[in-house]
Length: 264
Image: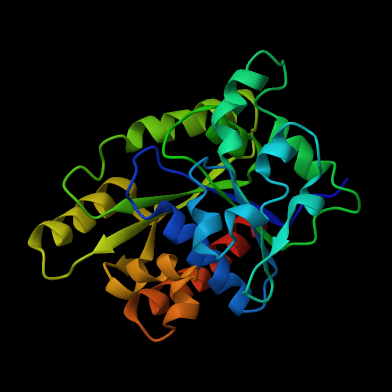
């Protein structure tokens, strides 16, 4: 069966780097500029689902059901308040998924098969997979299913710590399971221009990773931080705030980069 145009895994094994915030707002921005987008929430915490206003009691089917083969992607997807954006929500059932599927020979391929076996394909131009903050079996499933990996990186002193491990994991998945997997890009988050250290981190990351780093930098922004408590992406909560505008710019940059990757 056909698969969606592009599948992007949003991953970083460190918590608190803006991973889920980036997944939510990038998907919303893509939808706002006319792309059909789907988020697959495979983080047991379910923050992407909560941040898009999906009440826990309303999550009748979830990514757990998809990974165990109980339902297909299209049946698990729920519409959100954002036109053109759907989500396969997460539930706490995911906490036990590793034990359930760890002995299966295809344990790393569960999500990829679900995406590729969807009847009549999956009708989204972009699928973003929001991963847990660890390099566990769920994250490996996301990388095995994806075309590329997008890495949010917080502008702090330890920004580069752990990045090499993530890049090594991507290389391992590429060499053993998914030869077409690439690094879509690194997006610098929570940037405070008044902080000299943050400016130095930006320079260091760009020197280390070169053109892999997006030009768009996501600023530390109170409105972006407030939005999830209202069950809204920042772009719906306050379109004009600096964070929302940055995510719209990032969406345009992602699309441009995707076009170059496809043309290569």
